[in-house]
Image 1: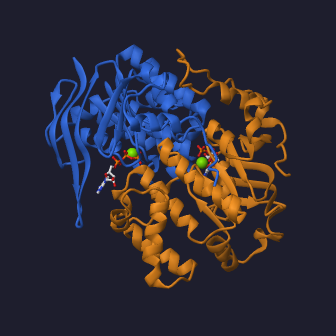
Image 2: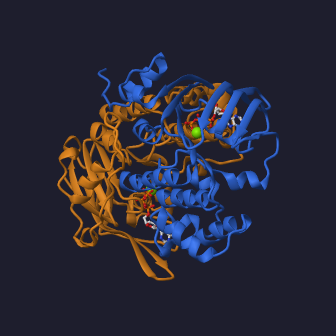
Image 3: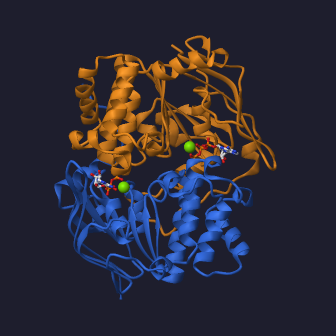
Length: 284
Length: 253
Ligand SMILES: Nc1ncnc2c1ncn2[C@@H]1O[C@H](COP(=O)(O)OP(=O)(O)OP(=O)(O)O)[C@@H](O)[C@H]1O
Ligand SMILES: Nc1ncnc2c1ncn2[C@@H]1O[C@H](COP(=O)(O)OP(=O)(O)OP(=O)(O)O)[C@@H](O)[C@H]1O
Ligand SMILES: [Mg+2]
Ligand SMILES: [Mg+2]
């Protein structure tokens, strides 16, 4: 069942050299599934995620035929209604976790605030609930982290705090922008397990933006590959290694490998034509 | 000559509630021209070691030596000409109101370089950013573009020693390959020394001769890269880490 449906999404920024199109006519759908997005640095992955939540900062502009959540076009909602969508239905884990946390509030204070505001749960339960969530994302010392300020956390701890925070409202859709890039592989598996469970047990839709091709291939159901603001290929995640597009093939070839040493890593020869071909549809 | 020597290094943080012992009794050597990788559990003290080396954490004991210089509490400007760091969090490490051009020209000027213009455009090309990025501000850049600006800034003073904290974590693998090739070339040409933190064991394996595995503030094992490639570590945590790196397995419950 399709929960989110995006048709012909554009994100534009006026710059001193004219309009820059960060996202150029992207269409895709999301059901109760794990949808991976991989692609070139600067290809528009984060902007796609932010555009869905209408979080593109001025002077950026977003247009689309529609961005529908369960049939309702988010582009037509008032800002007030949109805030409740952000609070209750769609959460986003931003690429810069520490930047999205309030630097002058302890982790516990901000998580409790988010809990009482969004779940409308009683305050006396909030602390227990927050400690439980920190524990669930494999924070070793939830008591200390509860009282810590964001700058006192390691990179991966900040990332996990963000993940725990975004799961508080029990969202229908989670957009996770490189959510595990600062986690060691073992903790990463534990966190992915949580996300996986939410998709399987609660029917959450997950957009998983990542540079880790092996991870996306083993964790996700489908993958969109973005290049220069467009989707150049869409495929089943477990077929990623048989990808057809030369960009995707190039990506796979430039991976360092643990099992076989290489002198030099292969680099891509980017063909200008890749940026010219129309976007592939990611709708199912 | 040795690049980096750590002898019984302890680093701690005093917070109002508790004292956090972030690094415990760590000894490590990186020979000049060599690269050592630091891997391990999130929160185990990897970034703290690099930050202590660059003088960002005053509360430490033990001994640190870099490029033949014994380190005390203060770092000289000369130190930062020799030693540069790429921070884990590229957003926090770039001033929000300084353009790419300002960031790089300031660093170059501080270290007494001339031909600033030419150097900036070379640095940007080296990290795969075209001239159109030169006058952008951090908020106008994607995550990976910001990370590349941070790398360009660290390369600008032509340091002998680079402390790299997850330098390619925000890059797609094709740009990562370009940056890693660049680092390998620089190491060869100028005999540079790298201490590199990464969660990507294949990246560490590609770049480093020795890998130190950390857990709970301690180095639990230092292994040659061949041992890691053969998945034959000695310590149980290292084994666990290597096994986890083989891909996602769905929990059956
Ligand atoms: N305010 C802005 N003005 C001009 N261009 C911008 C602005 N914000 C973002 N961009 C550009 O939009 C493009 C898409 O950015 P986006 O953050 O979506 O990339 P991304 O695919 O997430 O990349 P990464 O993997 O590096 O995070 C980038 O090339 C970026 O430079
Ligand atoms: N300023 C600080 N005040 C208090 N504790 C701190 C401070 N900075 C770091 N710590 C603590 O020190 C420990 C080690 O942190 P560090 O950033 O070195 O971990 P790391 O190995 O780099 O982890 P990651 O892989 O997640 O980045 C963590 O428990 C962290 O909470
Ligand atoms: Mg991004
Ligand atoms: Mg760190």
